[in-house]
Length: 340
Image 1 (cartoon, rainbow, N blue to C red):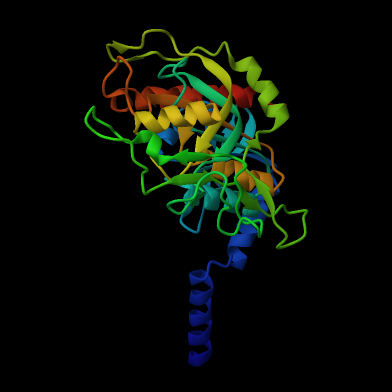
Image 2 (image 1 turned 30 degrees about the vertical axis):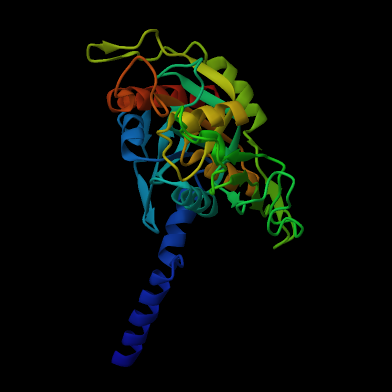
């Protein structure tokens, strides 16, 4: 008997260590899902999520307010009488993708809303504005071309379909910092070519890949977002106020990568090359998972700074990040109220 108990204990521990869902957890998940479906809300960090949890619009479930699994704390409740499950991802594309996949795997989710702050690449907009891009791309998947090769040279593994030159490149030499006494030289870092992600849709043949670069948000969600333009947003932090009251605006494109962009030259490149407005580290990962899982998705990102600086306001993110986070949450709540 003692040996049997020891084996059960060891096996149970190994199952938990390997990430399997226990029978007890499955019963809890089944109880939660029996009251679904839910709207999934994915938020990167605590300071972006706290305004949502502190809002009177969020009401935690009275019987199962949360479910913990694999290091994630899934908060269960209602917003504007819509059933929701909220999860904080943590920083980066990896964490955002893992959290979104867990959310969709464990729970009965009818759509995913992503909310947070972002850097701004669009000089026509200002801090505090809330952007809702129609398309998202992961701009951190690169093929770094060898020195001496140029746009007419085939990339490594391009013939096999792994990489391509469709989405263009960044020529490092264009950003050499010359003086009046220096001569133009080719930078040995050469060119970085942007690549589409490999995707494996749930209704496709397993291990047969497709490719995605610009991932569209859900058409119905994007149409609803037109009704958000009159949401009243905050424009001041204590006595520091923005030049004008922030607005909600649908934009063409946002981009994400495991890069915190605090560089004016790269910001301007992203805007001129890709017509990108919002720059962050998570949204494209959420978009790609939802694309593969055939789940409706939209992202709401408030601008906390002009990426790389250059506006009339100094130390933008430090001052206005909290305002941007609150504005994003206010728009998210209003969006949820418009869902039928």
